Image (cartoon, rainbow, N blue to C red):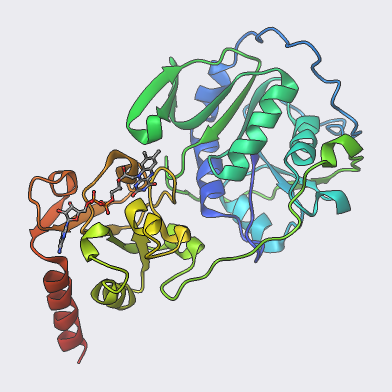
Length: 352
Ligand SMILES: Cc1cc2nc3c(=O)[nH]c(=O)nc-3n(C[C@H](O)[C@H](O)[C@H](O)COP(=O)(O)OP(=O)(O)OC[C@H]3O[C@@H](n4cnc5c(N)ncnc54)[C@H](O)[C@@H]3O)c2cc1C
């Protein structure tokens, strides 16, 4: 069985990256099952952490390779329907007042309590997915592979060094713990199932509640919010080449024409020209738009790590030797203010 931790947004919808992870689990189900091997040695102290009484219900079966989802907190009809379309056969719904606020240890223990003894537990490679899977690996004494992008009979392939290199590995345990790199695959619906929803009686150990999220503040900008950046089909990127904090006029106009989002380089956020929520790259958001238009961005390896999923890459840069231009599907060599200004003017003319 493959158990996927599914994250939902404030509206109760399954997040795009979780839909990707479920799709990865379903389309690689047989391969992942074939990779399960003998367990690594248990580290001392394993399982002393459990204070919860959740148990997989009697009668649930690990026969055949099933894809099951774990949702912590609210489970909406919309999420259930989305998971059904993605081919999930069972939804484990973990709800408890103490789990309303995110707490890595308590959430991870809840997942450990329902995880199969043999199979795979995975999440998407979001900060939360990474943290939870690391806890799950430690608590079950199993090995973990982060940022997996593919699996075959020989093992797993994962991104390392911010996506600039790949590593092949096999985990070898009875329970594989994985995170799936953002945009390793696209969400894919299948013949809709009617998932069984299993509710649990949970007891949360006090020692697992030492840390919890007490407040969430959403940083918004005048161009787009952070989730808009990861979901946008068109992203206009802006780097140091814009020149100053006041140099985003043409770029923001193009964002609006395209109904897209603004993404920026770390230089831009480091200089305080734009907020960090707009940063793309290794230490920012990873995006997979249909088109990414990189304006005045050189193409440093840490930036490229965030745009690997872009289907079409267009560079606007004065330096034809820059990595961004070399890697682009299309490149325009010139001053971004002139080029983007001309594009905006053409769009305005065509739209009347
Ligand atoms: C641990 C670590 C993590 C990092 N994480 C990230 C990350 O997540 N995201 C990220 O972006 N960076 C990240 N960086 C920084 C990264 O290494 C680069 O420094 C950064 O991406 C460069 O930003 P830039 O392309 O805007 O600036 P520059 O490298 O200075 O490039 C500016 C580009 O603009 C062009 N240009 C100048 N004027 C114009 C003009 N008028 N018109 C058109 N083109 C023009 C230039 O030819 C040049 O190509 C990280 C670095 C480290 C060490």
